[in-house]
Image (tube, one colour):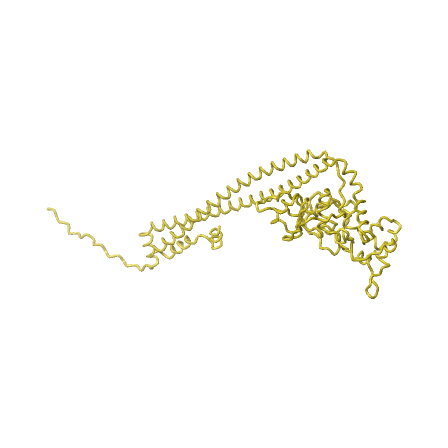
Length: 441
């Protein structure tokens, strides 16, 4: 007979209670119940890193386009200056061709005419000096005086245009045009000496020379000491035998040179060959000492109308070939000019040079380069504007992301401290300096 089985089923034993750290329980609870939130936090951190990288790359792209545009603008400015210089050269060729050989006959006597005008002006230190230079015997008798005196301002340079010569003379005035130029203060002392009472010694210096010629020197006269002048300390035009000063040409608000601008007076004087290599004891020539101090950055324009339109660009005065003059910004010289006979001599004119066609070809090539450069600038500006627009949109997206991530963090009350730290790092993905750099763009 079947016997019932009295074997007892094993009863479940109560689990042993374990002492578990609360922080570990929190991790278990986070892993078990909020694993989706942790994944979302990781996703937000990755998104933050991507936005940060995008902003950085766009910032570098903007910087690159800005540098390219700056380089192109500098190249265009230099090209504008070269075009202007070439146009001035061509205008000189036109002037030479129009006057023909008449100028060649006149210019050989122009310096003699200038000296004649100085002598006819009346008794002056300049006229006495010209007499001394013409008398070789007397010239050798005054070694202290003749060794240091270079000459008269009116005879130390030449110009290419009669109108320019006339206006430069009007601008400087008779006193400066007749000023005696000395190398050093030794020449100044040799020109005039005094007795114990401080009275002028009429038997020495330029006064003694005048007395020997029967010319009494009355009144005052100007003397320029080159070593005591503050010289121009900038750069010079490259490969220019005249060592013209590399002055920054005037620019309108558009970036273009003013219409009718011909150049700076200090560079439109041609220094005589014998004086071209003269240097003071400190190593400076006539252009950066004498000419720079009497003309500074005086601008020369073709017409009065051109000069007046360029007023915002004029810093040290301007003249025009048709009689306009601005002595200083805000100080105009109006009315009719009294004709001055003492002028700078004209430069030796050359007939229409054979290089004219070559120069004209160079001008056409420079204009073509300028057009291509302007196209490159427009293209680079468009790329820069697009990059800035993309950066702005990405910045707005990043700011929105920061706001959303902060809101998300506030909705996680049971987040483990380790996760809260990660979330805080996600909310502040950038170093403050980096964030300021991007936000300020």
